[in-house]
Amino acid sequence: MSLWEGRKVVVTGGAGFLGRVVVQELKERGCGEVFVPRSKDYDLREKEAVVRMLKDAAPDMVIHLAAVVGGIGANRENPGKFFYDNMMMGVQLLEQSRLYGVDKLVAIGTICAYPKFTPVPFREESLWDGYPEETNAPYGLAKKMLLVQSQAYRAQYGFNSIYLLPVNLYGPGDNFAVESSHVIPALIKKCVDAKRSGQRSITVWGTGKASREFLYVDDAARGIVMAAESYNKSEPVNLGAGFEITIRDLVGLIVELTGFQGEVVWDAGKPDGQPRRCLDTSRAEREFGFRAEVPFREGLRRTIEWYCQSERDKDS
Image 1 (cartoon, helix red, strand yellow):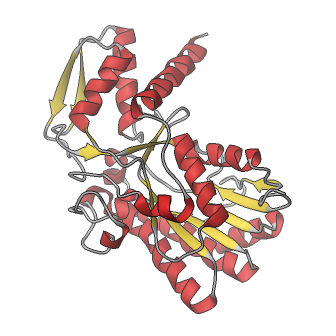
Image 2 (tube, one colour; image 1 turned 120 degrees about the vertical axis):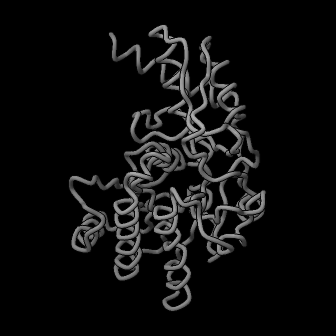
């Protein structure tokens, strides 16, 4: 019998980029019922809406993926909104889930919670060793409070909640909107659109010296569900692929895979963001057997293919 058989699971953000894949993973593992609250029906910042959602869904487990999030530009323009919305969603959901009697809550944090100058590879023990990178600190700290609340509720109430820290995600179905996309979809869009329109150059923010780590969305969803199945401790857990690539090398790879032939212009007046990101992923492997499987180049190829097809579909 499947662990998930007959279980009811709420996946907040379940209609989003990561959420859709998590929902699919749960269904493939035999989950009895998955409830995806939509923001138009349930404003998760509001206590009454959270209470109503829990009554409607009657879940055994809540997986909290919902977040108000974006790239460096969106973070700079919306620090107050990103702090308030993410903070309130987390606070209300954890408290009301505890009061309702939910068996387990899986809280999804963010790599932005780590200090700006964290030694590489990032170990979970370093989370409190400094202030996050300034451009995304309000978002990172709001999501970090989920960890504080989760640990406090376990200590006082015995409430089983866990906290996962996924690195930057990418893959088919990502957000390619110019004003709010993260680095990989933004670069793919720039290269593909420039190639289609015959542009001779693209402009990229920063110097290209910063490094990032990326996790394919299918791998992230699998890791989250594996933790939901078998991880029940208070310590936070990194979810990543365990490698880093500079933004300059990332741009070169996307230029190659998209076939863009023009020049790359670097706008060094724009911020690089956090200098380096690369996770120590040993805890996830040790605690619940998670290891990323999709090679980065292959994941990028699939993502580019998906975006190109979605653009062709729009034109037809």
